[in-house]
Length: 321
Image (tube, rainbow, N blue to C red):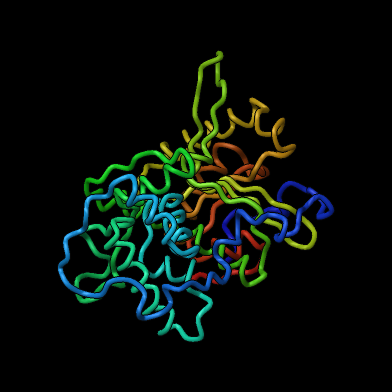
């Protein structure tokens, strides 16, 4: 199915106002064909239990010069998404190789080099268990990577304790939506004009009685096709919150819409797309929203994770069983 609550294309903004993807290099360019010297088997130190040297300011500058364009993109993706699996990183940054096997080998080699440098680190917990090997790792920016990124911008210092399973599941589900959008842009199924992760996508506004509120979507995206530009606030629901909690979040979106702040900045208010794990949850959530807002409301939509991309592109979807 294409979504439990389908509507006409959102925003009614004519394509004449849409910039072509080539005019938006910050969104898609870092995912397209970064050939780099780390593709060679001789690049970087191999094997051993060599102790990592202390990262002085001078060494940090040297590392910054030594990193390839693709390695920088890997760091930036992890900073944006917070957590990514080996497979997700391979899909984002190693899709230009001749075979999947070559992409997998080079991806693992690059990640191992970045790990040795202290740029990235993996969680203790693996997705799929120990037998899945390095492909099961969940990665995040390491201490050296944070220092490298802070030289370029104001990337906040991360917390390096081991996160809980529920947090990891939610963050990886959000990351999967982001990865699918990038892949769709690469295939030409849509133009991904903007994608913002937390906390960049958060919106501050004055709510009821002038109280300060912060709306915290999981993702914000602007996509386009030949005719329309569509704006989306994306909420990834893993079925762990009660329906009253979901409706309270919907009410906050309604208050933000009524504030007019988004419309003043961008002329349109984005559709709010709830992405849920399965058809049962989608049906229950859609029914709760209809009871609260009526059948003709246009702000909220609900779809399953399997139908996320077809809902964005407006194509048909059949849920995978």
